Length: 141
Image (cartoon, rainbow, N blue to C red; front, top):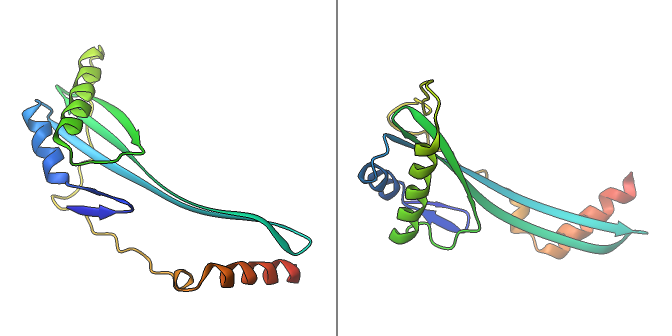
């Protein structure tokens, strides 16, 4: 099981269920975004927001045809019913396609590379210290 952001995804479960549904291949791409905005006026903080979002792009391959589904704001990525519904919808989208060209999925190595998360020292500081730092940086410019 891979823990990424707020949610955990059991890839093996998704791949096994995709085979049971008759898909020839499955590719899962995870997009994770962290955003921090500060609005200053006359050196004072007017407002600030911090956001974190995770979304998933899932490609399915069946009979040399490929299509995708985009998912966001998912509560439970390992719920069997949810996985089955997503894969059924993906397969149905593939069956609708009526072109003759062969399609493919990313043909990487047998094992995907592990991407180490960068550890920022900024996360160790209190929010007020970060905000004061930003105010001081803007005063310099």
